[in-house]
Length: 541
Ligand code: NA7
Image (tube, rainbow, N blue to C red; front, side, top):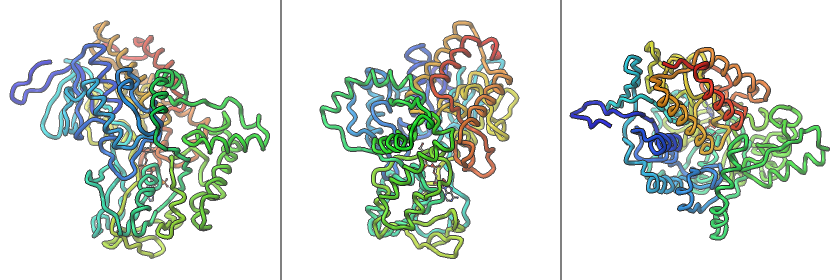
């Protein structure tokens, strides 16, 4: 690495943007296994990505330990998880542990947001700039910004006029928000909304929940591990990772092999009830191999879910809104969340539910939230859990330019184009881990990212050995990949639902299958084939 003089650019081999799981994995692979000079540029204050930034009440991962973690022995052998579903504080401590073991922070530039990147084909170099005036040059450019970089707040009239405070989940004050004795509202009932609601319902004087679509939430069994369980888990971790590596989603779980038609009604109900009781994402994974493709199998799954949840709710109006008899969309085609006592909270007299599907929010006034029926809900604090412009949104402010100066955001305006969700034609030497058109949100992130980091390492190694200065996929390779992503999506029920998987939560965003549903093992095979056929599928210069 060249030592910069008075504002000269920093020169390295690779620049990664983001110090979450992806950024750390890629740094470790390129730096420690290939010996490259690598820097991470991170907008936040520390390691962890969303686990450093998302400090809203109740923030907790819904993939279980230890498989939601790094698979390096020196990391897991020296760390004990205290909870099956670790909360944000434990994850933050975990990332500090990761730093102690892997020495990550020494190669990070914190508090710096990338706002421009362009590739010079003559020099085969990326120039990356940050808002605070830093310039870094590198052969490889790896935006590892996750899928939740760009928050979404519906443009309601009057947002700025509110006299109380509004906090989006991704920009929560680190010192917390005291809601004791206050009237509060939560807008949105995705994974985030559910976590905030579970906490605020216990503390606030009145909580008003604004729900547009019910979340088909599943039980999270989250009692802390005892020392014996911790020891057993640590001993079993290598095997758990090895098993997770082979599954469709990178989770340590088994997948159904029998279709719905192979079950009697009684057998199907028993299997579904068992999965509901088991908790976690087991019911999402399903009792039937065709649960996400066959409307009948899907409906049977929904009916058991609704029956179980309805039994937990006392108020008939809330019951019909939270777990209606008719599903508003096929089960599992919006991401189900995990809940602990979400439904029981609605039995408390201070927790109110407003259906914004039939009665939308029309305005935020100085006093509170006004709905279409003219009713004003007066509150002191609003928790905005309205989600993200997933995956593509985060690139809009990075101004990444292709060989012809075309912005990536512009390139994707009419629909995403990538090869294997990892590279984009005309953006040479740029890799997008945990990105769009990859299996990303259907996977347990760390396991999937480990594979992608290995694949990036292997591509870079091959380039370095072969003297390849720049590599980007052919347009035809990317077109073929998009066709594959769409075709697989169309075999499922996902396109029937307006979800962020389809880009449908953001007005004006093209509605398309944004993620690859073929699972990690198949995706891995395809990446392996691509590595073998570089000259056929890529432009190698
Ligand atoms: P999500 O899952 O996108 O949830 C956003 C929620 O906000 C969802 O319930 C939306 O209802 C609701 N929403 C969005 N816009 C509106 C408007 N205009 N009016 C009313 N309600 C609205 O985001 P999360 O932060 O909960 O979770 C993101 C991911 O992070 C999650 O899946 C995990 O992987 C971690 P809708 O369903 O669109 O009707």
